[in-house]
Length: 245
Ligand SMILES: *Cc1c(COP(=O)(O)O)cnc(C)c1O
Image 1 (cartoon, rainbow, N blue to C red):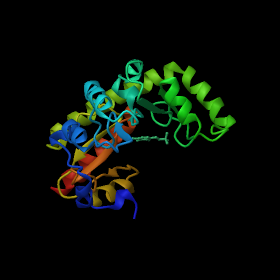
Image 2: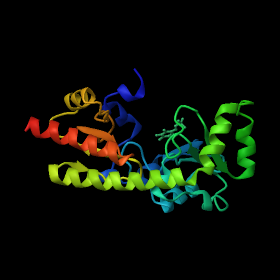
Image 3: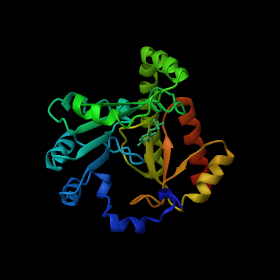
Image 4: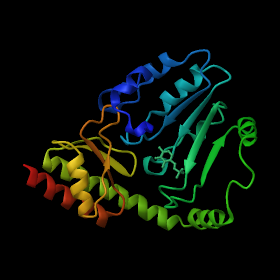
């Protein structure tokens, strides 16, 4: 059983009670910090909700952790959100920002990412990084991807349009959704997720069942990338939900 298979109630002991609308639970996080805390992970924007965390909340956590502790900010979806903690790192030498090339740069599977932080902290982390952790093919792909600004610009604009289309469809269908700062949207679907996910898959639309995540009962996560794909996903969602009514 991996973490994703655990029913939500098993999270209770870990004090993971999502706030209404998945607002970052700053007070709960601060209350959970003890003198033995060594690392706090914050995912911004969050996956699977897409909800963004205020930079001031991250600053607050960074100020409150013990001096030996590190705050890791997972910014895998930061390109879509349009903001990053990186400019603040000079003032917060106990924060490390993690970026991935799997999402906005389209290089999933290459296992390539970047950590950004204060040089002293990076020197410590570097001791734990294996030599040759990046292979030559990944380096070649990274150089091409980073210099292809047009691809990134175009994909970001597709994501923005896709999210607007999905929000409008959810409004039409009366579905609850959460406005996302990432390239996916969490949608609450009445009548359970298992059937919907299976029937959508038969139509080549792959929805991610998130119903077992805390606070996410009846929720699926729909990717909002390429507009043409989103339109097709929305058509299938409308077909299946209207048939079920
Ligand atoms: C996709 C993802 C990652 C990183 O993916 P890699 O392919 O290993 O770079 C990290 N954090 C979150 C929240 C993700 O969704």
